[in-house]
Length: 180
Image (cartoon, rainbow, N blue to C red; front, side):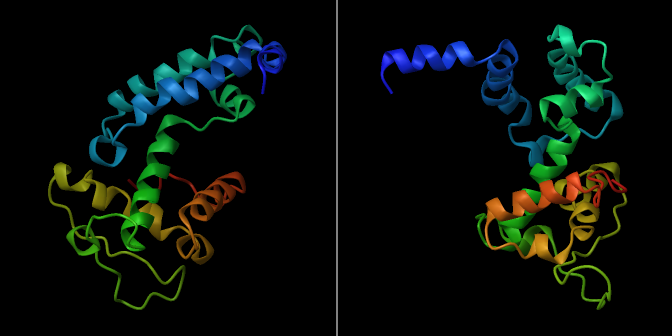
């Protein structure tokens, strides 16, 4: 691409396209860094983080009067809470399928009670006696993981897995905040 092509390309981008690209590539990664390790569990903290994206979506005059979820839909964004849940699911997929260096048995064990519904990779949810344990990664992600379908958990690659999670979200077949 020569310099003339670049100039023409940037002239076709709208302010919305440019700001959205900057937000998703430069700013949002800071909000999502190490999500499985630090994901907030207090409603107050979740709202504070979500407010950042809420403010960003109000930067566009044509969207200001729309409710937050409609603005996200227009911009093709997920709530930050949904993205945290998605990141947790991606990490579990990596652990179960040996893509991560983390040992599966340090965090999880398969449900050995022969469930008849759902998929074959269901995880056992242990009793958590403290809030610290209840909101720990290996506990908070189990309900969401167990609610996925077999096609998703047995995906052949991480990108296919991500696409299947997106498909389930779009079809409203999963709620990424089940019983956490």
